[in-house]
Length: 223
Image (cartoon, rainbow, N blue to C red; front, side, top):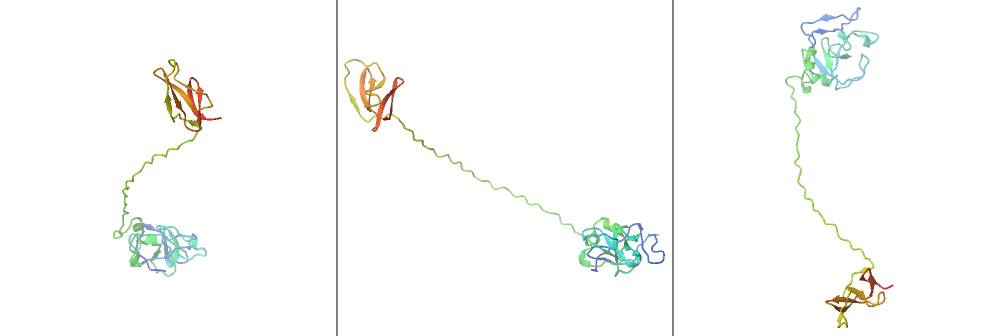
């Protein structure tokens, strides 16, 4: 197993000692003399599959005890969640998961002597630095929006606005009593306009004819 870090134990620790009785409980006021190491957890002797990010430990084989079914050991799940046994660890030593080890020492140390106070696993080690995440606020860049006026569209129709192609003035025999009227509705482009009592001849645009419509005239395409 890879060498790991230092730790201690709770006020009351379940201690597994190998013997005919299997295991006995002891109340501890001091610490066992042993080292803390770390390993890569997996399927442990206590019967569960564990991962490296859990706060767990593998206790040394003498304190774990000898059982036909290792998961029967009272050491399983006591204190710092004992989930495995460490065959290569000496008496008083524990093998921790990386997450548990990082609470008591720097991983670069690899091994921490004279451990066994698992209470230290509840708070990070004093020498462990915590890097606070920094946030970066991006200032939005103002954008310029150009409004494009919609292009105008022209719809072609057959209606033609009256235009003057030519005008001839002549003296009427009597004062006119109309505003405008076609000389020959629907047949010719010429029409008469009454100006100051006089009828003036005007003409629609080329290709169109004059038609009387509701008291007025229109210039439109010939039928």
